[in-house]
Length: 197
Image (cartoon, rainbow, N blue to C red):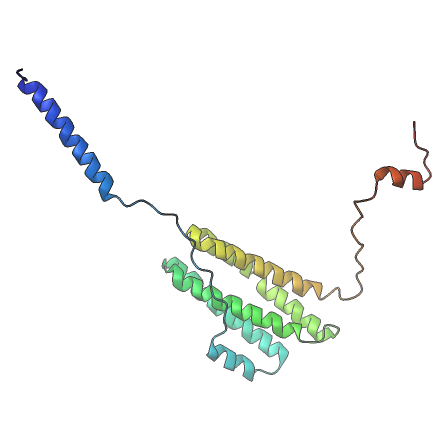
């Protein structure tokens, strides 16, 4: 059987193409699932802790802590602009550590004093602009880092709510939620309206 040159060249081209595709397929590594970045570790550095411990007056401690936290947040914004996301995440952890430390400090003070309510008011006003700044950071970071920035936003929102709740104290009475286990027909009978047959 005689094979023409034309058929041989077509067969050879198909063999070469099949070998080329198989080599390309072997050369590619399978894409594994993208793991999220580790959450930022919330901490207060030793130098910040020593500076905070030297500040005894609650108002000056609050202002100094807010100043340190804003510096951390500004560094995180700068590092995010440089696309150094791991370092920015570490700065966010330091920022959250300072805010958490301040929450604990204010929580130890007497809630019924007017000065404590003033501290809470100043605290709420100071952290309010941080929420949009964190939202901008979240939008400019990759997905595996933005999850933790969303948690940071929620933490700051909870912090604001806690500071605002201090204004209400013990004077606000909350109604218990309605009991859903009651039968709606039983409430009609007890209200005096006759039941239709």
